[in-house]
Image 1: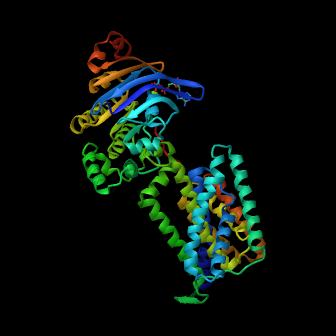
Image 2: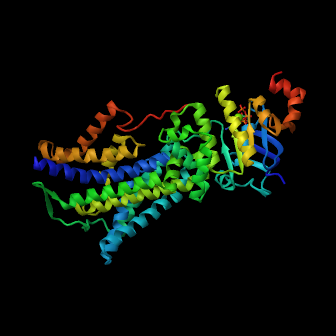
Image 3: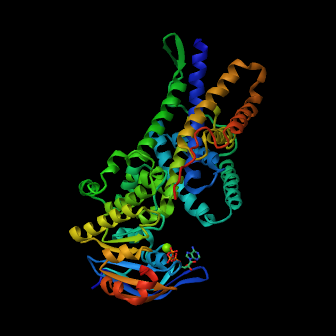
Length: 293
Length: 236
Ligand SMILES: Nc1ncnc2c1ncn2[C@@H]1O[C@H](COP(=O)(O)OP(=O)(O)OP(=O)(O)O)[C@@H](O)[C@H]1O
Ligand SMILES: [Mg+2]
């Protein structure tokens, strides 16, 4: 039983990472109807920036905050420079552009930092604490806590601030938003900035265990896609729940279904996704919007 | 000086020209009605004012040219446009819809005071504040759209066929509120209507559009007596 709890907690920790990245995908898809295939590479890039800052002697948390700022500006810039020009282009064009961005960022990272694997520090101690007889790793707890703090802040921002409201409004009804005085095109850029920040958090959380290299996020982004689709590609709550569920499920499978082996984790994740989508094509949390005319 | 002046305004959708050079004026504190058959260009005229269609010619608001402005710029100047179909944020709550109305305003205290004042006319909104706006009835959505526009404390309110799809009683209630706000607070309104009867009861002045041009204009009184207006739009 204790091992089961440990597995759940560590599943929630990795699930939190998938959730953050999935939420980044959802934020962008809601506002610009674009699936950002480069989200994972952007997150890795941000993690490299954090690595560089720490490598140059900055301590962890200032580097963390500075990286978030850089990621935000970078996300805004990507929307302005790369996405904006193809805003009205067919979906396939936009897809190609984000895939191009993926390849470009990936190459840039290998060129700037070399493809070799780097170790990345964790801000959390590597001890475990005893909670009612269950040893829980402070790593896992820290990552989970970090994810929850990030998501809570984001929720409060969307729920209670004027800009958060405008972001939601611009995503669902751009024309009315403009009539209300919202500069919609900047809201889209802002959405990309926030998504890049979320990606940066997930990158910095996963890097201590997965090690930093240009392809670090390539499997994780697939889990994030799975989580986003599982929850419903336009549902922020769905992305978070989807990510956590997937993290726990994968961890339990890894621990208790050993015959499957680690190389089957990804196929199993996608099989779960397929099964859910067969029953609920729009995802677990996608609401059909009631519209009256 | 009129609050809003249009001079030789043309507007087009791609190759289709919808307005062929129209001129009209809305004085401060007036309710002005814009009548005309389907496709005459009424909606396009409002869109030209708020900047949601490409237009040329001259449009002045408070004496300043706004013909090169954007919709968000018009909103910031105090032009509240309730579009055809009401422009409800269907996925957002009723309360968030109202908050969106206040987006252009900075003074929070003044907004809460105004909200209180406005909600007197729409007492049901408080009780439904958490409801998804898209699930309101058509009449409720139209009232919400009016309330949302009022929270912006507009200098000029543009209404596009508010009576569309509403029961006669609700239409009367709606225009009753508009008239009250006009008389008590000097709200200036440019309203597009198919229901010429009610529009000419509430309005001070009216313009009749025909195929993208102003065909008739005058005081509401004059238009009610105008033979052809009576036959075409009032139906008696
Ligand atoms: N998006 C559009 N694309 C192309 N043509 C348009 C568009 N919107 C309107 N038009 C054309 O412009 C002309 C004027 O349309 P407008 O919507 O202003 O008419 P209206 O007077 O509001 O009519 P109604 O009473 O039916 O709402 C019409 O001929 C219409 O077909
Ligand atoms: Mg119309």
